[in-house]
Amino acid sequence: MICVTFFRQILIESIVFSIFGADTHDVHIINTNKLHYPLNSFSNKHQSGSLMAPTLFPVQFQMCSLSSGSSGNCYFVGSDSQGILIDAGISTRRIRKTLEEIGVGLNLIKAVFITHDHIDHINALTLLSKKYQIPIYCTEGTWKGILSNRTTFDLDQRMFRPLTPGLPVEIAGMVVESFPVSHDARDAVGYHISNLNRKLTIATDLGHIGEQAAHYLKKADILVIESNYDEAMLLNGRYPQHLKERVHGLKGHMCNAHTADFVAEIYHTRISHILLCHLSAENNHPATALETLTQSLKRKGFDFKPHTIIEALPRGKRSPLYVFE
Ligand SMILES: [Zn+2]
Ligand SMILES: [Zn+2]
Image (cartoon, helix red, strand yellow):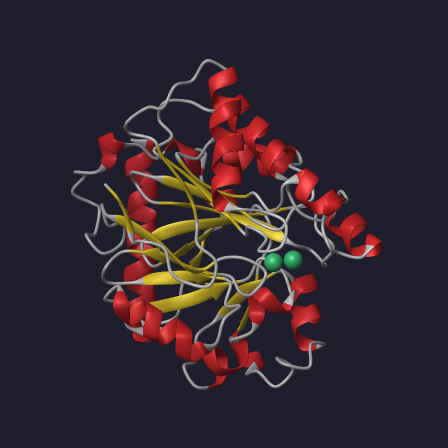
């Protein structure tokens, strides 16, 4: 009954919104004060509810990494009819072309959500905002960082949508929540994205997994988690000392071993995908990251479950299109 009330509320807000001329990029920010139950109590039993508009909470949930790593990060999450981008750290042309490969036009992108203002996450924002009028969701701190970046200072500032960590946004048939992460950028965040069926958490560019990141990773059944470097490779590699310290620091990046141990700690059989992201070209190999993870899982007594897909997202090219039923 409580959930029915919730869906009725969203539905009514959607109808009111469309009657009063919202453009295709407009979204609803859910006022959590109005909610009588936590958002994570979505469950399959509400799927067939008559109050559920088919486009509001599509059953199918898709994700594709267009690029992952320090040369550029961009992820598509959505359905075949609408979606969002998480980060836009490659060229707009490449975003458009790669999306076309998976059958998604840029016109279906309702917003881009930014994790933080490093250039490998914001490169395309000028064109996305000016030419395509795509709203940009990010924290105030990230927005200030974006405006002070010489490559993006000229973007369309009207497209800014301030984001408050913990306050959910309903968009493109999904609910998006942000949570703070520890990184050397202002107000950096990760994202938890859910629909009726599935919960995806993306935690990239973080020096360690803090309490809030752990909370959102634990409740996901699809994990996109950074596994940036192999400790020995970083230590013995060519990076200058200050860069080694930055990467290794609490506000830097996750190493394979820490990611693997954390995932093994929280692993449960409902997790269908573990996708390692933001791998370093200099200090990591996909096979090394995957081996470190599988060893940690084995030490915890978890054998490969056939239903859990464990992969490293490729650098510089797109991943397969993951379809989560
Ligand atoms: Zn990055
Ligand atoms: Zn970064």
